[in-house]
Length: 355
Image 1 (cartoon, rainbow, N blue to C red):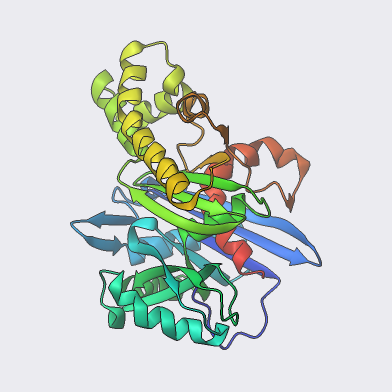
Image 2: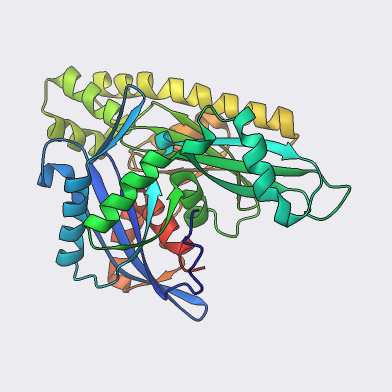
């Protein structure tokens, strides 16, 4: 997370903003003493403003629609009557590069320089044009017998500048930017000490993360996306996108129409192959077993998906609720549980800003 180094205190209220491909989600949370409160939330879809997506990743380049994204953010803030202007934005997985590597024993004050010196060996980006962030995975700084293992996140400066422009145009005070994978791990894994495979299935891409005792150790991105399932149904049934999306969300893998369920299985199975490979390689290289699998992202609630993953992976599968530790009106309980997979990124970045 890239915080402004001149900040001395965290605010008591923070906005978490997730600019997705087809929608923008905002949560406002506060912290008073040891408790956290969900103050407000809002979402707007790109179809409400324009036909083009808020962000795209095509031919190796990242494009963020500054004008429409900032306009949408202001619309949400106005509609929800949100007054807080301190904000943290998430950066999508396809705009970040994750790598982990070992460093020799050293003091904590030396790690940042060592990361920057060693990163060019592992990151296919120009370091002078890149913002780096790192997390200590294992080892004890200052112990001459302890090697250190770090997880490094690299983001092109151009991407950082795009988000800075959006914040400025939306009238927000940007506190930080954070990779989606780190945010999701914070909002869903929390204090869980197990080794968890956290799968975030979004509209445009999927990220598979390994979280060990609350620490993100590995992150992998794939092209598999929830909208592929919708387009496949649309094509097979000769339906419009919105109607196909409704069919997908209501029936999913449990559809009694064989052509629908067969198409979905055909698209999901290659993703499962990749997940099995990641789990197996982690077990072989680290000598540890994945204990639970968490599903999140807009496709996590696809009917039948949780059960299918449980059968295929032979693991306990959960769709955790990112709002579970917050105070909120009881009347919102069911709605928030259903919304949770879509809001886990926004909640995670906001939590990071409250310390």
